[in-house]
Length: 95
Image (cartoon, rainbow, N blue to C red):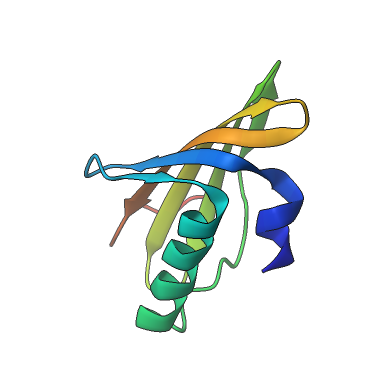
C-alpha cells in the first residue's frame, strides 16, 4: 500500500459518513488494511468522476456489488492532509 505513503501526509485526518475520525497515516493505513481484510473482493474497478479545483479533489469510485464510494480530499504542499470518505452500498450506477 505504498500509495498511502505517496499521497498522504503523516498527520492526515480522515472522516467518514458516520462521523468517525482517523488521525495519522499509520491509523489510516491500518483502517484500509482492515477494510480489505473484512471485504477482500472490494477492489475499486473504476474512477468515473474526478474533479479538481485549487487544493481540493473529489473522486468517485465504483466497487463490485453496486457499491459507490466518494472521496473528498484537501491537498497541502502535495499531500492529502484532510479527507472525507463516503460509501453508498447498493447505490445507483456511476459512469
